[in-house]
Length: 306
Image 1 (tube, rainbow, N blue to C red):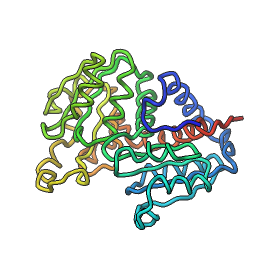
Image 2 (cartoon, rainbow, N blue to C red):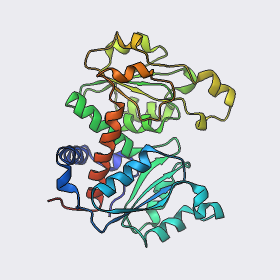
Image 3 (cartoon, one colour):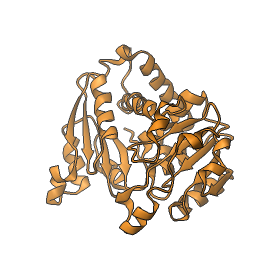
């Protein structure tokens, strides 16, 4: 039995194989409409979510399976003080596979240590978000036809953004990738990512504060919101929340084939006018997330397709 807690739980070869399966699902959805008939997915979401939770649920329903679970800690026995370990022991009796989102780093890993079913990390605090990373990789590969030899710009909240941390970790294994890290000084990528991933692997990167200075270099621009829920000081949040807003004026200097990604939800960091630009790929990401999660659940459940 395997779990997905960290992007590095999958080898590059396994990721490529999973993305190939997701591509086939996208092109032939009817072929997969009953591959998980009789299977149950439990969604244990201790933190608010729209896209991730509904994406998992849609993915299982698309494959003929069913879904059970809760959408907030207040509606679960966690409100009574039940531990994650005890919750997953119980859920293992009800479901075949589980997706868990939790505000505490390491909670999905803890759950996997007590689970009798595959556990998927659907986001743990500011740590990792591996299924969003798989979604991002699929979108990049669809748009650029490769995952190597790319210049990736990451913009906004790079300190608390778990999607950023996971994406850097995953892309660091592909040849010829270069990162441009665009953020205010207070929201820079954490030192452990810089030291243990980028510097440790001699991956070229630069840290800048102005998106205008570097947008012309980028193959991918990955925007993120400044997350109010990750701040202890509301004054800092108010001061920084509008630091980076992508507009069509800024897009004029970008490459004609640059792709703009965003894990969503968007607040105001991408102007609505950008939505109509063919380089805007963030709603394609949403659709790709369903295909990737279908492929992942099939893989972890060891389900064969027709």
